[in-house]
Length: 162
Image 1 (cartoon, rainbow, N blue to C red):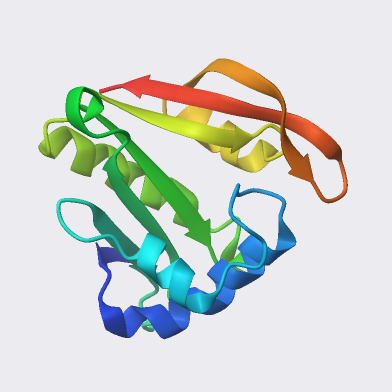
Image 2: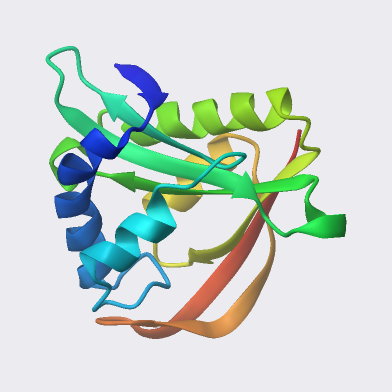
């Protein structure tokens, strides 16, 4: 698997699985009715942010991540990131590779830590992955997320010092 910077030409392959994941409403605090135009603008980040794709040896796009400073100004030394793995490729290490790429990027860019602001507490695979990469849950916003099947569930704030 190759992880490389995303280009505008990657968007047609990213959009179908990003749309599927967002529309399911189970793991991201994005509007489930998010349009393609809105999604593209928020996913493909301009520099100094970064968007990457994970690509199989046959060229198939497996997933994507974007990363940037969590907050501007005095909070700009803490990074954040988002991950989308095409569900057809779940369980193949794509998420783990994308998290590793984020850790490397954040260290190289001089960030002191990475913070995830809203990890849905029912997203157990993501939480297990993040914990295995050294992240910890700092706190949970009770009922901070309205899950389509589980009802109101918590949102974890996860953190890792670099």
